[in-house]
Length: 238
Image (cartoon, rainbow, N blue to C red; front, side, top):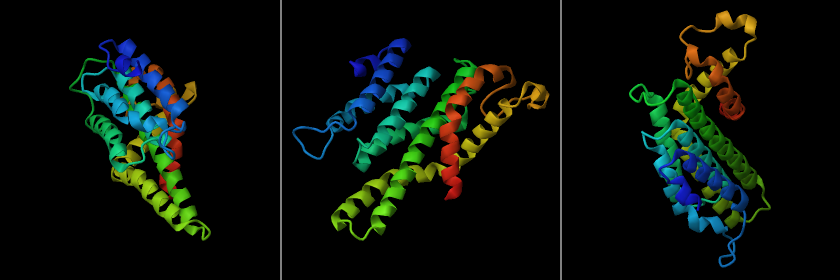
């Protein structure tokens, strides 16, 4: 049902389908597979989830649909359902494509408003931030496991391999992501200034908003900045 809705021609139905997918991942990511001990039930549905997400990253897709799909991607990657590097890479590649679109801008696609474009760009950066946060937490757990002399050697090897995979997928994008994250945080800081300082805002807007879309962009920044700030803090510490 969620797959059919997420791949519909109706944007409203697509949004409902993506919301359902996110709910399914949240509720079932830790439910064990009865027939295969040690595995979760969602592992066998990764192909369907990936196929439902893929159309949302097409160039002509509405920004709110792409933004919702980015949330599902980050939720799926962070859930731990995908244990194999190839399974992780399929969903990760969708976020890579969205980051590439963000880097090149959307000047050649005047189909949607600037405010919608801001929402999509910040959703992409937020999704990447959430994935990076999970990757760094896993890396910390891996180091703790390696340093624990009482742990089983085989368990350490499996854990190290799984945790290294996620961070290794994110690491190549960090030069771009860190720059864009810092730009988004600067935008948020400026937009958070009290009204009496509004005259000091840049007349040409910020990195992801224009002067005319300041008011409509603020809610998007408020939603995105906590995860971005957390990710930047982890990155700066490293």
